[in-house]
Amino acid sequence: MPEECTMKFPTVFINHGGGPLPLLGRQQDLVESMKEVVQNFLPKERPKAIVVLSAHWESNPIKITSASNPKMYYDYYGFPPETYEYSYPAPGSPDLAKRIQRLLNDNNLASQLDEKRGYDHGVFVPLMIMYPEADIPVVSVSLHDSLDAELNMQIGQSLAPLREEGILIMGSGYSFHNMEAFF
Image 1 (cartoon, rainbow, N blue to C red):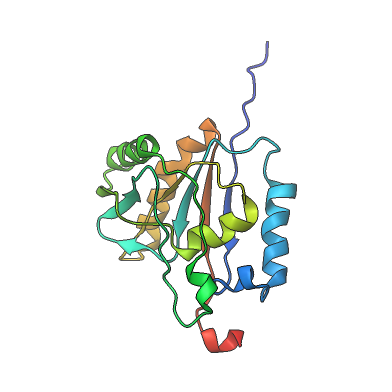
Image 2: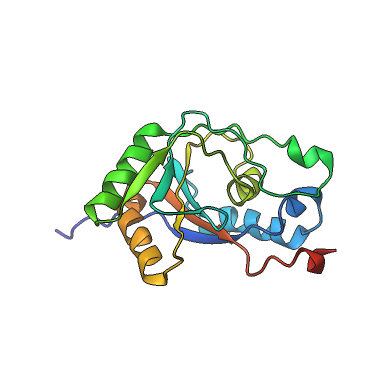
């Protein structure tokens, strides 16, 4: 009898746009693209958790959010006041954070749990659009601050087993940060 095939949860990269601009209606094509990813490219079953590697968090050693209820981290400036009031109250997952730390350590990648880091805009902007209910646990993982491609690929390889557990792994970034080009 053939072995049962288990589908892995996909890994995706999301262009999160310029700061909070997608939430302000300034980058509607990106908003539609983020919604299409959920509708057309992800399983109909919602992920059990979401792990986000945001382009806006680099550290050495690699850090992992581990708070039960992460706060918001408004890592942009010069936007309308309402953009500093956005809320994405998705729970964190200390247990998943510890599991991620073990996976990284098993691959000789030094890491630390971080209870203070909140959701930066590379986390909350796409998730507010893709999963507005904010009811799926979210854990953020930093990039290594060397930005060494091989080392950061090792982070992804270390996280790969989570895909088999119904966990979405999402990279979030943008190709450039020339804010003058947006206005």
